[in-house]
Length: 222
Image (cartoon, rainbow, N blue to C red; front, side):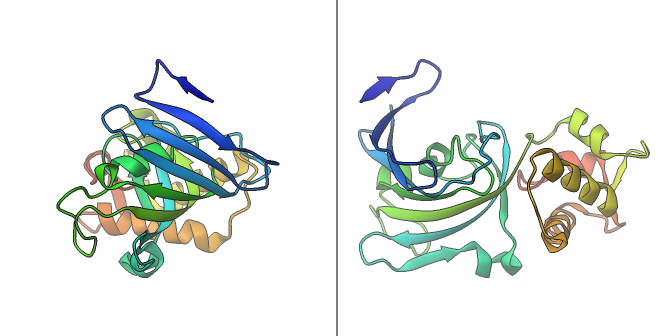
């Protein structure tokens, strides 16, 4: 049964649903396209109270495959030293199909998202993805944070109010957020996130992030 939502430019068609820990499939259609994004939830954690929405920062691992022959064209675990990716949902930092397909996802959830060419890489393709290719992404969402360029978020992380964020301050913030969500994370997870943040944003290599550095990153961090 399909229902048009006045708040979004797409609608949801629930095809099949079982128990919360079992897979289910959803189709999403963008108004500007007559093709659907197919979502298969392959794992849903017991605690799924926090859900991704437009403007949130998501931290995720994802693998990309061509539907035509099943070949893999991307793997975040083997790219960029294996760090998961940070991106803002719903603002075009990832392809349209992923912006649609990851909406409402919660930390720990895994999805298989099948995306038609018009919502993926289009008629021209990109890199190893040929023109007019339907693609599949297997996505594991690790973390959701409030969106970028938030002075409130900066001040919350900046424990000593010195207008600079240290690695330990960011790590402590991540620990507190995980605790709020009752999510268990290994210390190595926090180390990886912090390393990725500083690798991409500590432009003057002084071991801290200024307000400017925090705000001027390429949409790919906290």
